[in-house]
Length: 131
Image (tube, rainbow, N blue to C red; front, side):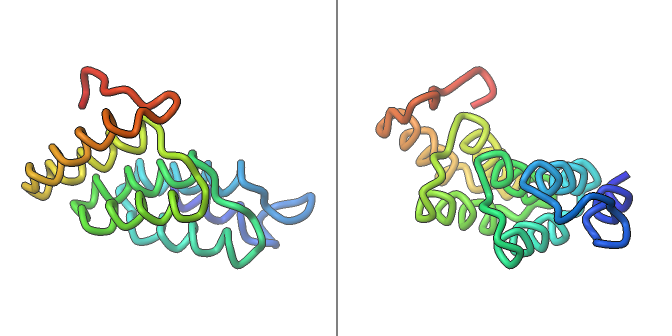
């Protein structure tokens, strides 16, 4: 499934112009579900090259892909990157990053992220049952 979603982004594979954030988000999400974390990161980089601004959905899918691929460092890098680029992390962002830390046996970092969620009080960012 993820291969088909990515294929749709290629100019010959998609009719009607250049892919937008929705198409990239769908393809990145498909990569996450297909456990293709490297491809998800490539898509995130490709968005910027094509002048498409990654949004919270884009980052969440990429962070989740890293979590599934046991790439906790990359997940944390994405969390930092999204904030630096003005994209506000939400509960899904933090939950995915915490999950990545848990899978990487980085429980101290997971606890730091949980504390950060509470400290920042970012709109829509409240710990839930998953975190």
